[in-house]
Image 1: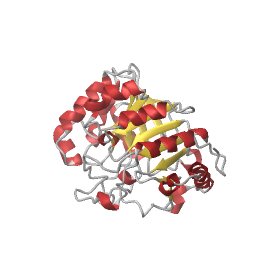
Image 2: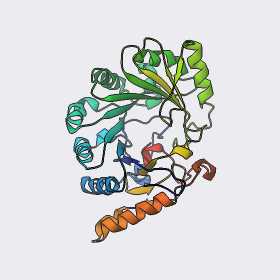
Image 3: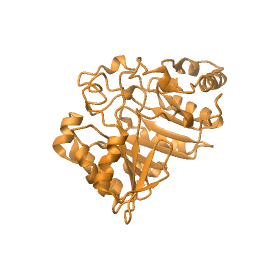
Image 4: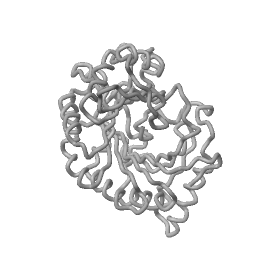
Length: 323
């Protein structure tokens, strides 16, 4: 699929639930009401239908997200469905790691290609303060398991909060000394359930880069993914480092993705307030054809520059739209 600006659309992020077992201050309020945020969970059959049709239309990469996707007991089955769908080349998921020890073997057996582990601190007390749950031992165990699983491509997503975890940049970088992984330092985005966006905790990409160079003046710039505006390697290190300017820099000109929310809505742009409800189309006899039309319609309406549309005020938390 190609949109009206010539961008090839070959990647979909599917939120398999909007529920989460953490309450990170930059994502969900403690009292977050999931009943008002599209917590309806897509069933396996519908997800399989979406994957099949999207693959037929040119989608090649799938990422399962949430909320926390490992809250789905059938997550390995979903990975297997995606991996065995003709046309799908790459299947990954993003997780906070709390439940990873339960599912890692199943996920590998199902053919999972990679995991993005969301981990903002390597300190147990800071973790409890950020995530508002005392789950650091489980997440640390998940990290150690992944470091010993070379068959999976590992990326660590570390959201930077000024005055909270910016002093840990070297500790994260050192994870790549002996392990083939990418540590990705990320900017805060304004989808935080209206909690801390305006509290002065934002740490921009340039500030992150300054901290990195201060600690590692020998950094060597390399070419990373489109979203990884700054990518680096260090002499003698197996891993790499990247900075994701998720808010301050516009990636729209190279955007290749669609999103499906946990309640079955198709979003073609993170900042687009309009969505297309796919759920009713799975209930009628002409469902496949109608779904194709709606997908193509969404692609055709994908904006050239989503940031110019402003923040999507219909979304309060990234858990609603799958990160």
